[in-house]
Length: 298
Image (cartoon, rainbow, N blue to C red; front, side, top):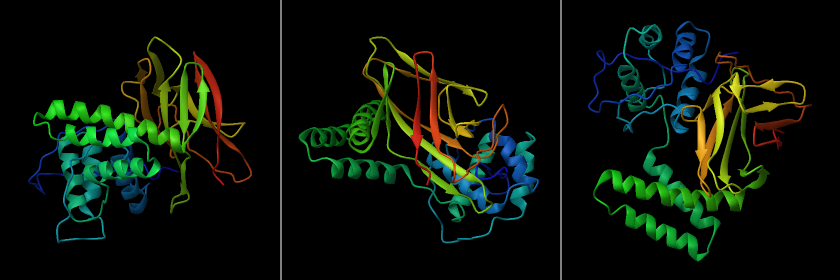
């Protein structure tokens, strides 16, 4: 069943907002918007899907403040607008600005960037009392004093990657696959209100064994070095955050990635199915190494 990945589309000409968006919308989301507009996806799954996509960075929407005019009902006209966007009749920017309106009235609720940064910093500090973490926190604060935006962001990115690596190493199980170490902290798993099983796999991959760059490859559901298996059937992803089909790791570099398994998005995808009697594994099958990492979904 097509569920949580569903997304909303709205028309900005009807609802102009003060803050315009520079849209970064994956093309496959248009299909999901059409499903929702046609009634194949429920409102609850639709909203939950948007929140997940924004939270995981798959769908980029500028931070939007909630106004006093809150609502708990998705307006009927939004479905019509979703169909227009799915058919290419309105732009991606208009689509994203429509999502901002739904965030403004409280229908979509996601963690802001500043809240996420605070969470990363506090979690890192709580997970370790060593001097290295304290030094990195001080370094991060120094980065935030830089006035030029690009230099500040580059500085913060490097420090945050180091903090993330420390947190993963302290709270994850490491798996060595060829030249890459995968740090697995556990999965997020739930059954949606419509009965769709939703599995989120988040890992950190570090190039620990090669003096050359190592690439993690996934160009689409049908051509991807990563999937989930129950031992007899393979499940292809519903969403992922690989850039241009690859994550390239320089020697000693570590990067986080997220993959969602749920509804079938097409392009060779599959619908994820959960059976409590079966054991599931996250399967890695790269030219430089392979492994099945057990997933605890019980």
